[in-house]
Structure formats: structure tokens, C-alpha cells
Length: 546
Image 1 (cartoon, rainbow, N blue to C red):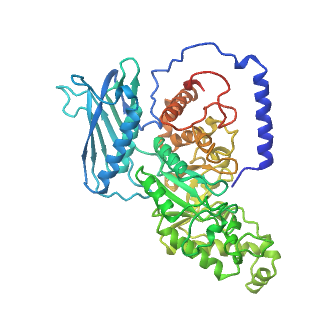
Image 2 (spheres, helix red, strand yellow):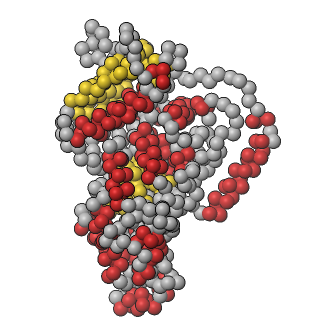
Image 3 (cartoon, rainbow, N blue to C red):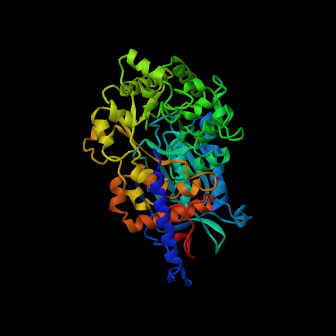
């Protein structure tokens, strides 16, 4: 799943060669010039499905109020908390905190109407919304700002869009909405729009994870795939097997059950599901720090020992405990990069294989299927990396979601066999591949090679993957952003709409604008056009041109 280290070294050398050339050229010299944005473009990211706009500029009252119509239970709490968050984003300038007596504003209230009382957050929840922004006058009985949605999570997406329409005018020191009136009807193209976060290769503090979840909501991503544990460390508390987190790097780099619940709840308030991953049978060396019997032997530590029922008892205990934390219907069981040489060279496992008339390939299949049965018994739908499908497709549980990563052509094969699929082609959507430019991320297509409409529906969506070998709290966010936003628009916005009205040049300007929106909101997003992602700017200049 991770990058090849020798390739990374070569890429690093190429990068510094480029920097040396730039430093010794005139390319770093800069003269003053004013940046002008193309006013014909729509600076909403991701681009809405359908929208119309006008040519008026209207003002927004810093004492903006909320009028929520819907169930008064938990749904109102989601909307009310979100409204307060967005007010802080929109009215962040000190000169614009409170309106003065006699001030007139066009927009004084946001009306949110939610039609459903069901606030469960699961795959395929209705995230559609309509947004009307109009100047209140004698001709407009609706007026103000109105968001209408079938679920509170659709209303959240509408609030995000509304916040992106609001800009601060430094001349009059007032928040304004340009190109009013706006009428937007919007819905996502795919139900699953994810970001994978790896907290095993480098521990990420809870506050950093929350910041990433917050920034995901700005791009309308809706699944955090939490790759919590791997061979390097096991930071999660598992009450049924309390020694497992002895596999953490240190006693300070751990997540308690309460920490994990807090992250799940924080994400839900932003319309984001958390899909946990326990990668088996490979990538599990850290488990043996607390329970050495899980290793095939002290000198051969992975994959997990396939011959012992104890191994599956531990997996069952982990999943049982995690089911109390993670309500999302999908659970990732990994299954990738399994080198079975420990099984064929460790005497007791070799004997077990012979006794059961199994090859190591058979044992790999046996392990994956048994782990799937455990997950299904916990009322989870199993997700597995594509190697499981590539190796024994006819044996996988039909509920399996195949997670593509190795390259193209996997989702077409998976959906042709009746499986659902998640697209994460490493050539485009692995964010630790720092030399992949934004446009390759942007134009990667999850439905490539799938012509049948019915088969296209089996592609749940896709996710960008932030593997953590070379990313920690110091640089993970600028590695994620802004390239993750390029994938976010591909997953949310209608493909025809973005291709017909959005040339590469226009998409770049819009993405540069969104990157600057992220930085204004406190997200350390790197420049869009750097040769090497997450690097700082190479020269002076406007945020909107880099």
C-alpha cells in the first residue's frame, strides 16, 4: 500500500536538483503586480450540480440569526452547532463582529428546512440540498438565505456552500455576497468520498485528526478511513486485550476508547463517517508486542499465526470492542501485501498446512474469509484491499467491498463480478506520492472502463490515501491539501458539468482560490502548482497564483 522508498529517494534528488536550478536562475526574482481573479468563474468548491446567479452584491449582517424548521431533537443540535461554526468563519474580522445601530443589511437570517427526522449517518445518506440567496424586498416573500434539505447532513453541505459565497470587503469592512441572487440545487455524484489517514507509521494527536476532519467538511468529503494500526505500532486501546497497545511507540502515543469515540462524534457533527481498519493477516507485527503468541515465531513475526484459533479469538475481541466505537456500516479488514513465507517456514504452521491439505495461498484465503465472518457477525460490511479479489474472487463474501489501489482496471472487474468497489488508484490518489500533480489527481476517473449504468452504481466512490511513512503532525495537512480537494470535486461534482464549463485553466484558478480559502480558515494547505507537493512557495507572490 505504501510508496517504494528507493523511488522516493530518487524523486527527492530530482526535486532538490530542480530547486538548485531555480535558485541559480532569475526565476526567483519578482516584481510587484496585482493579481486579478477571473470574475466569470464560480468560486465554489466542489462545483454544485446546478446553479444560477445574478449580478447584485448584497450585505450580510454580523448578527445573522438561524431559523431552523425540522425535528427538535439531535438534528437541531447538528444544525445549530454548524451554524455557529460557520458564523465564526464568515465573520472572523474584528471590525465586523457586531452591527451598529442604524446599519442596514440585506441578509439578516438563514432559514434551514429539513424534511426528515432521521439523523442516522450511514452510507448513502441524502446529502442533497437547495440554496436560495436573495435580497429581501417587497417582491421577495422568501428573501434572505434559505437552505432546504431532506436530511441534516444535506443542510450541512448547504451551509458550507453558503459560507463560500460570503467574502469580506476590506473597503467597507462588511461581509458581502456577490453575483446574487443565487439559486443552487446540489447533490453528490458518489455516496463515498473518503480520505484515509494512517496513524500507525506516525502517531497523530487527536487535535490534528480533528483539524483534518474539519477541513474535510470544507471540501464535502464524508468518510474518514482511519488506518489506526499497522506493523509499526498499535496505538488503540482494546479493553478485551489490554496488552495490545503495548505495541504503541510510547505510552504517550496512544488512543483511548474515549479518544476514539470523541473523534467519531466530532466527525458525525460534520456529516463524516469514520471507517476503521484492522489490517489482517499482514501488517500486524505490532500485535505481538503485547501477545507474542500471535507471531508465527519470535524471529518471524508476520503474517499473524493462521494455525491458532487464539489468533481469531483476538480478532473477534478487537472487532467486538471496536463495534461499540464505530457505528459506520463499513469496516476495513485490509488483506493486502501478505507475504506467507513465515507460514511455510515455521514448523508448527507448516505442519498445520499439511494436516489441513492447504497451500499458503489456501491459508491466506482461509484467514481472510474467517476474518470476514467475524466482521459480518458484528453486523459490519467487510471492505478488503484488492489483493483478496485478485487472488480468490469467487470465494469472497458477496457483501465484500473491493478497495482498489494497485492500478487501473480493478473496479471494472470487481463490479462485473457483482462486487461493490472503492477507487484509490495509487498512481493518482496516493497523497504520499508527492510528485503527482494536481491535474492528474483531478482528472482521475473512478468509473473509467465501466460503461453499464447498473455496474457504475456498484462503484461507491473513492478516497485519497494519506500514508504516514513520511508525514506526521508537522506536515500531514499540507500533504493532504490542496490535492485532496481535486479528488473531492471529482467525487462530488457532475462530470459533464466540470468538463464542459471547467477547462484545466479554469479548474486551476478555482482550486487556487479554494486553497487560499483553506489557508484563511487556518488549514496549512500547500501551493497548488509546486513540482513537489507539500513544499513551501518558491518565490514571492499572491496566494491566488501558486
